Image 1: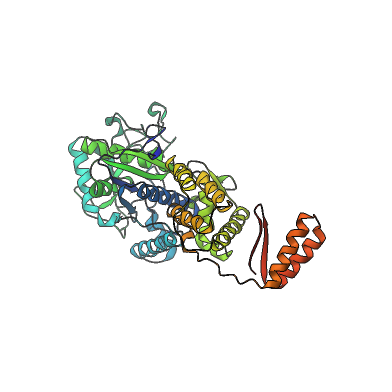
Image 2: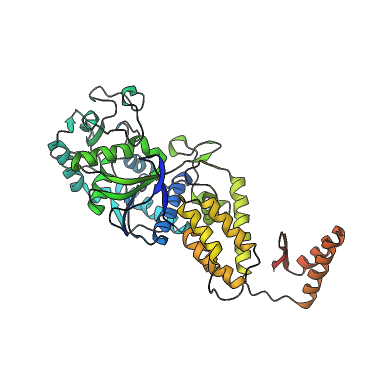
Length: 459
């Protein structure tokens, strides 16, 4: 079954067809490392991970690239305000370079906690300044740039397809509507390729350029580094929906203006994680991190399962109560898998086909999870169930394949109590059933009533 994805560029679910199959050039926007990634950020990286795993499972040879933004990301899409890295350094009372190192390491630790696969290539903006300057020079040679008192800008009016990704109505754009007003900009949508350092102060990160001392604009790095790693045209670009109207729109403009070639064939975007039905973001000061989960003794993998329970293109509202419930679901999942004795052998084809069909259909993780539960509740042989769970977990990434079968020694006396309780339940003698449960639990065992009957475990 072919992999189908919703392509933001065409607004359609369509068969994914790489340029040179089975090779896939895949780029995803990475973190701006001025602070700890919050759960809203991490939902995006979880969706990217599911996409990465599904591509690999589909038989593609994936070259996956992610950037680290350690310079140039300003606090406004209008190319105004502080550089987020400089802001982070002032907050933490350390150098910008120390901030970048600290939060890059924390991000990678978060990835490990969430079982997110690392990319084949990490590319840092500060390691690729010459490539970014060279891209500006190409754009300048093609007549797409102009200089103002604060930097070098891309003239969006000269790129006829500008705004196609976001379906922007350029005639309706006004200065101050999408971006802050800048009297020197020729068009409201023009964006900075290179920003000059302030005259009255020295930045910690700044470089010589043909236009003056300064630093690259945020949008520039993704174009320069993705094309360096994957070529002028590549297959797949992923990120959050918030990148569609500005960041990714600008990537397309500067890349295609420089090369004259189509930039990316398929664009895939993940929706927001909401908190109290509003956007979670550092600017709104309503963010939570994996550290906050640990403080509440909640597993990062419970958050992963929580995100898998919603389609990546649907908004997901975060609450602590919902995550606590998901933690219990994860614990139940672990118990059920631990109860599957026998060495993994051949799985159950009909369940595996249903599971992977759901994933091939635009990464339908809720439907895939439903198939997993259907399998676990079935009367199929335990060893075969375990084999299929192992295959499914290659996509889910919940660590289910590592759960060892539970060796549960049940004394004859407990087996007798369980049988008596089952008889009491069938007779609807609830008082006796409750009393027998207490005796079983007092003996150090747990007991759950499920649609498939009683499930005995360790206390």
